Image (cartoon, rainbow, N blue to C red; front, side, top):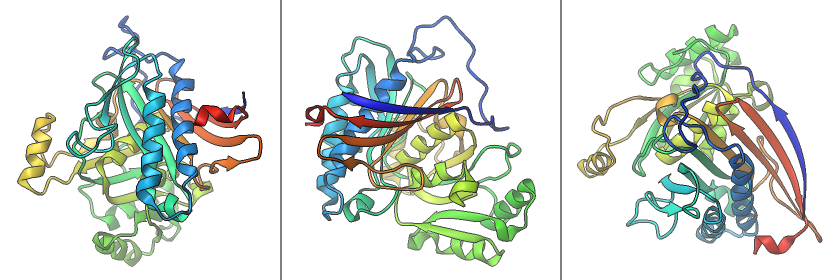
Length: 352
């Protein structure tokens, strides 16, 4: 038995957000068709299961065990769903990941054709150290709608809703992007804060941003949450995300922004022939291409994230004597609806 509290909000449409898909008469899951609305609840169950499994490993210092627990739980739940699902963004390519690898088929094979992007444990190090903002994340889209990218790095830049289209760009310098964003927001540069992964490779970005007088929020992991935080700067204090992180996380972040509003660009880092060859096998023949948010996640998109550890976005899993409490955000692009679901689960056996 689960007691659920749901809050629904429709965010303001962003200038850059893709138009709502037109009805085409196609079946759910076919390119151009709409996803079945019942999947909005089903996708929540997927992230809840993964989050609870990972949360049992919080603070134990074992990243691999925490990640494996989340993967196992998410895969079991996905295989219960009435979908013909294909993992297009997963735990790695087939020869690198035994489960939830890119190309793996999940579901009962009896429902709509669905592309799936997932990260069973976003922020494995965060979870192992019991630090903020670890999440279990999944996105569903119509078949053939998510960018099928290799497991490589991606250069990213993202802002929230309400700005003119093209206000920031990967082809501009960090200083130029900060200045353009401040102008569009109508504030001094000193009131802009950029979220950046704390990595040596970002030393130049950090130096450039601070040199123009803007602030930096450094995060150890969890760049999906970092991108989502740009959608509500009044609460999070983050106006812009920039820097290099994983391509899978980039596609998931783009899926979230398609639902909640904002702008994002991504460029795959294909800096070796081996990476370019892997990309060509997936249909990517322009290694320097800049992908817009709508190109990384097209059509009708569902996105769900459940908190594993406490964070700015979501509370982490709570274990009680007779219940487990989870908090999840679930979004849909075609309706621009965002639901916040706090669930109290009293049948503990369902989590294994």
